[in-house]
Amino acid sequence: MKITVISLCMAMLLTGCGVKPSHVDPPASVKKDTFPQTYPDPSTDPAPKNSTP
Image (cartoon, rainbow, N blue to C red; front, side, top):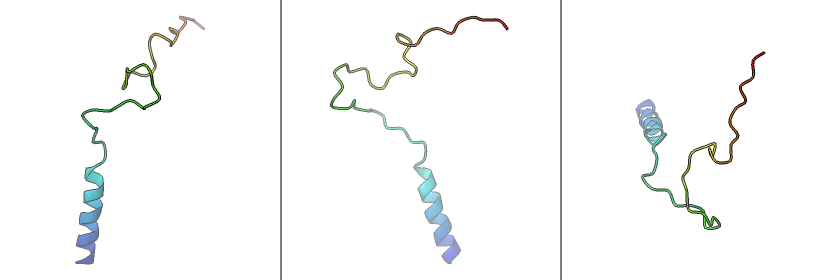
């Protein structure tokens, strides 16, 4: 009986893993409201240099 209760509790803890909210609000200190955004930001991330060894 004890193992069953522990197993059910562990299963309940794992069911919440990986669940994303449908809407995320930006932090209050952010002036530009583009949250969430892709990472890295393509406008500030330099393109990789095409170098051959």
